Image (tube, rainbow, N blue to C red; front, side):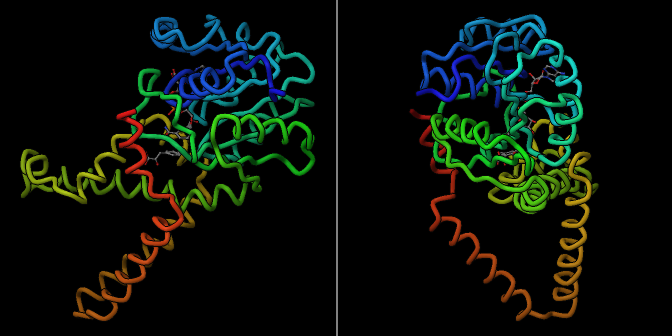
Length: 302
Ligand SMILES: NC(=O)C1=CN([C@@H]2O[C@H](COP(=O)(O)OP(=O)(O)OC[C@H]3O[C@@H](n4cnc5c(N)ncnc54)[C@H](O)[C@@H]3O)[C@@H](O)[C@H]2O)C=CC1
Ligand SMILES: O=C(O)C(=O)Cc1ccc(O)cc1
């Protein structure tokens, strides 16, 4: 039996449109509605024909839905929740895909008292945005972390778990605060570092912009992919996960200072030890089947 039969998706960019495509592929009988604040996105989604019904407003999209998924930047979750509040039927499950969970759980709980709120974070994405960037296999074999409050309805949690499993994800349930700490290290800090490196390189006065582009081999090129990620989305991530990001950044700055000292004092052993440890982390990720670059390449050519 399907966990949900009428799903509404609010925010039809990379993630919202991918969720829609994945539902169509895995659960074709589910009735799909949705909306987006941007009229150009709504028009494009109608052209792409990935939903049964594209409404002009979020309120109209959620009428009769048994699952509503908010796929907007984390800073817009509270406003969207307030907009849909009067239109929700009792028993509707509310979820989201935000990259930060503590703030979103608090915002949704405040705006939708008494509703079943089961936040989720598919740890899958790309640097692209908008409905054309989405694809049905985005969540296949990727983790989706579900972060319900302690007193959440266990049946609603099970239904959201089944939903993500049906579209190919591996599901883990975690406390929202713990999620935010883990993701600060594995996702938010790396994005901050990529934004900084690209900005530093293009600011350097003795290296012209064209040289940065011309000689952007290997490492720098990889950083530019991450640094091309959506500015609104990432502004919201850093402002919503301030505490964990600042804590992680403090640790990172200390480690960077230690490296600086090792280089200054020709401490080759310290450098070698650190680089050896890092290489082991990369190998562990590959052994665990979590290196997604090859998989992404495969998908683009499916
Ligand atoms: N991009 C990624 O790789 C991943 C993103 N996420 C999360 O998914 C969410 C969506 O991100 P993307 O799909 O990448 O962004 P996107 O920029 O591709 O799509 C977001 C859409 O939300 C719409 N929107 C913004 N404010 C709105 C409002 N008040 N009402 C209705 N629609 C509104 C925008 O017009 C846009 O079409 C974010 O919370 C992000 O943190 C989660 C996993 C991966
Ligand atoms: O493109 C990449 O490398 C990403 O890291 C994608 C991504 C961005 C944000 C998330 O919350 C989850 C995944």
